[in-house]
Image (cartoon, rainbow, N blue to C red):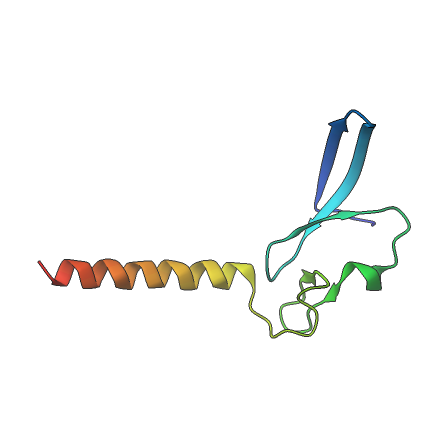
Length: 87
């Protein structure tokens, strides 16, 4: 991958491994990028948000991770408002 988003190292009894990493723009999953991997095998590019997506999110509607977080925050705020109204 030309411009990875991150870098991971792992030490175990079998030895030391290193990978470039990237995260899915829709679900936030972190993928380890193996050298010489075909880009089509890594997932794809979302046509709506132009973010890199994992194979699990290919073909699903665009629902970026940031939007999911905002929706969750709004939901929590509504719950808190409902609880305050009962006092």
